[in-house]
Length: 385
Image 1 (cartoon, rainbow, N blue to C red):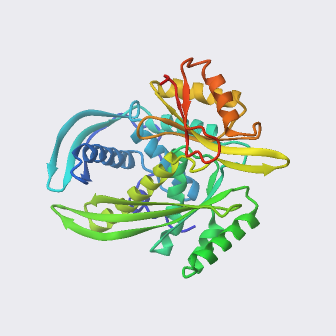
Image 2: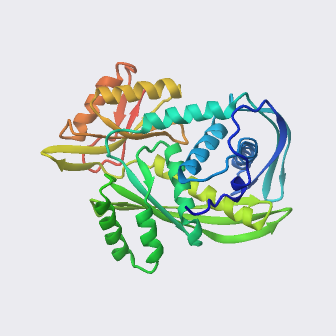
Image 3: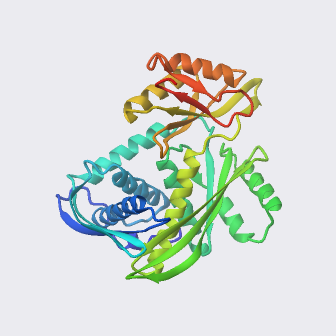
């Protein structure tokens, strides 16, 4: 097993399960992109929280599973800080040239890791399904071949945290890509599909991509900034479909190496979130065993209670005989659910059944854009028009 790329994490102690509450002033910085101070402030606060969590509840990583679990637990704490980390006060926050800097007085809650581990374990358990539908192989490469395995594990953790279920790092494909960097796309896609089918893992596609520095680190005030690019392709094993996502991200660091690593991490996270939020481009029909299988994404709007509404939506879909591949809350507070079913001949029939079930909870629910073949997405408004 290759060394984990996260140099910082390699220096941290083993998981601490019972430390007492301890306050600490932590600094977070973020690049101000397109003069968006609100986003920069939010990113700076998240970076401060990340640093605090990594330092206080770090992990000595020895395996791929530990890498993924640590990232999931860490990001779970950062995104749901209540009960884990308390912001006692904002010491300072200000713009310094092209970046935003915050100082937060943070305090760890009682036994935060135990709580977070339990929550993440429950989340992963709910995502894990017996069906292999929607499963994906992951293979992310970088300029440095030594880091290839590490970035793939990072992507697996990001996608799991974003709501994907049956995904895994595919070392066979990673090895093949590493040995055949000069293949053209036609040859590469053909071989990746062959390897994917040959392994017989049940995966339907591969998330293949690369992470690289688009602009090397450069001094900016008292820090360094760097720009990274993550280019992701979703390649179907049983079809000719290839969907592409490309994200650029600018990040800061106290050194050039730290800035470049932060930029790569941020670009990969943003591409994972984009992938999670991306609705199906078309409704897919597939004949299997004499039954017609329909795959699509439903977008539920008018969410007022994330826990309550998502529970009602999932129950309604299951009552309508729809299997759930993955679900995620989008940036604009909608609830996107990727489903498949073999119980209907047309998308129109699926929507009618879903509406019948969802109206038991939301009598005024209506749908938009459900025009059978060619639909980009189906929107269901819980509160009506």
